[in-house]
Image (cartoon, rainbow, N blue to C red; front, side, top):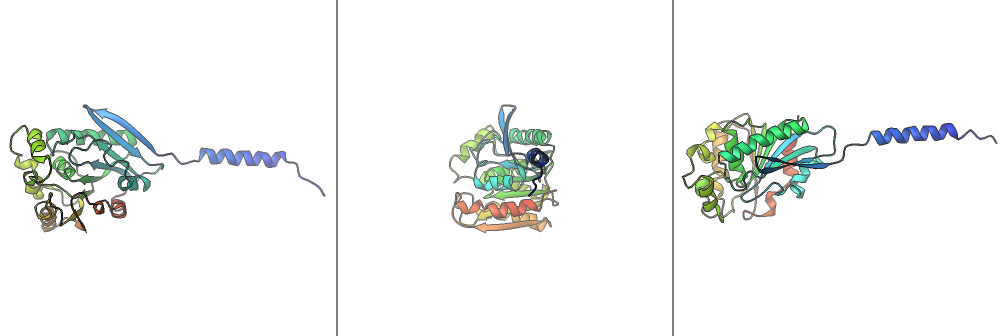
Length: 254
């Protein structure tokens, strides 16, 4: 019996091992920054071909890390989305500072990643922040996703702390009409796709004064708008449906 020399075989194995090592996919990462005293963050997926950037607009008193590590938003990251967030002045309720925060975050996220913003995702107060940005100079994304959306700051009397926070956000003055999304459905782009997730049982951000009102007005204008009805109160976990968010986001991917 004759044996072949081992050296060529070992060499081939080493070459293959080296090629495999250099072809490894990027690992997921988290990048922090600061823009005009507001913390900002990027959750970056482990892929060389991301689907784009999704901006997350947190609810009242949230911050840059709010829900960013929860399975809900991490579902987007696992599906190949870069997810960006900001402090957004915490409880700014869609005032001019929060609009500036949005513009700065989009610019920073696109510079850092080389990817365009394709999706806004908002929770509660974040709906007012994101929608007001869209009517005050920030380019609207192809898709907008709102969970338990608070879109009328004048109807937040049952939300704990909201009256005080809104008063502070607008320096004691009434919320201007152009900063109330409930009054500005005619200004939101009809070529953006809108998806709402809301419960008719929500006792504090009442459906008909918020999601229901904006949904009907957008539909009347011919916008592509859809609704996932869930159950329970404002904090019910059914609002955070990973499969629904990911499915909708895929329709926005480049």
